[in-house]
Amino acid sequence: ETGVTQTPRHLVMGMTNKKSLKCEQHLGHNAMYWYKQSAKKPLELMFVYNFKEQTENNSVPSRFSPECPNSSHLFLHLHTLQPEDSALYLCASSQDVGGVQPQHFGDGTRLSIL
Amino acid sequence: EDQVTQSPEALRLQEGESSSLNCSYTVSGLRGLFWYRQDPGKGPEFLFTLYSAGEEKEKERLKATLTKKESFLHITAPKPEDSATYLCAVQAWRTQGGSEKLVFGKGTKLTVNP
Image 1 (cartoon, one colour):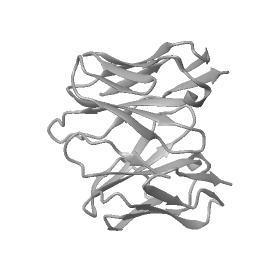
Image 2 (tube, each protein chain N blue to C red):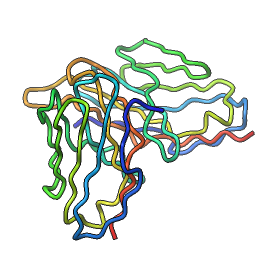
Image 3 (tube, rainbow over the protein chains, first blue to last red):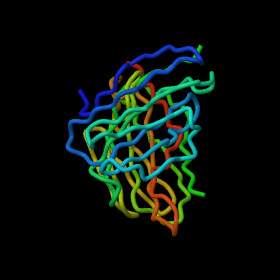
């Protein structure tokens, strides 16, 4: 069992639905990340939060809206998604964004857009 | 632009047949290189961090090495449970206005047959 828990593990939604992905880390870390993983492509960084403040938005469309209420929780709010948004969404955490520190990943939410 | 290329894309080995996976990188200045293992339906699991050319790290049947242009993940006498996708990622020194985000390769899918 990892120290990063993501829910739900699977999500099917229509293009007009609104849903949220949740991530919780129990590692005492201060930085949290959202990644998108599509088949045959490298992991793509979406957002970075450090001590609850967003430090990076990697040109992500506004239909993805992150929220970080505290250092242990991270959400990704989804609305009006497109079929190409179907992918595995991974959450990760690290001690903070400074230095060279490994990121620890959750098991992801498999998202399918109908 | 920072780039990471992993080869081969897929590798099939017989149990006990040692081999190596390659991670070639192009970065402005390397701060660290990470190896991860990812099982189907799971998130990436951290294996190693390498910081400078000449460094080596070992864990069970795995040994990671680093040169100025590439890293190798050597697998000695692999077992079926070593079957997974192995991901390489680099972190580069921040240039003015730039990001120290991890840049991932596409991974090598390793299958070890009994």
